[in-house]
Length: 344
Image (cartoon, rainbow, N blue to C red; front, top):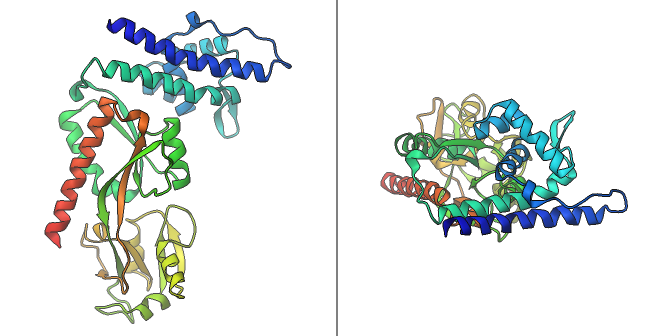
């Protein structure tokens, strides 16, 4: 019964791949003459290799991801090229890049592999102690500092062979990366995620201001006039000079001067300590350490707190390993919230 269930799942997944492949042929039949792929030529290991190659865009990195030697991965790439009659990956000035056909096939192949994983998960319980899965998480240095250390500590105890890869992505890239399977999770602020992406609020964040202990005008309190007239450092992941604070000030007919922006929370205290700049940042980061040469002051206006949110694709809802990792993250986030309540 198990074998038949898995066989049906694999066939269903491969059928979706063949449909894309044959559609591609139909679109180009004026220029090329090909025969449809024979399903008997498809080895599930080749699909896994294809997924790794498209994700890593490197034969050596794909081999490392799957625990293979580079020659073994090269053989699988050669076999894929033979079956699909396409180069799959080509060398460019920007490194190895997928071909147009490979990009067309990437999503249905990933979907087919997810179907197989779900079928297996429905029959076998996930065992963290034996899992060697690699999870890719897109997040910020804020989350990396306040949440990831405890997550890694827990993994070392309960899932010692499981690995994490943290990535920094522009917010406009996150939804696409989740949808394409390039990352498994994102922990960030993304209010405009599409319906295919699930979300869960993890912990609340509030803003405070950091200023130099030696600031010539600002002492132990900060007025709105001082705030808007001082130079500012902006922490942002969008690569510009305007953030949520600036949009709120615009609504009030006010404007501040942002002299620099960067995506690094942990660099801000060191810059503020030696300048007359103000940085508005997470209270959790501000109170994480006794930063030398700076002081923490409340915002001189009301600003709604925001929530750090965990995001994942709905196809992973029932994936047991994915569920397990999400539950670990939720537990850590709840403990962070309790710690913050105790401090307040």
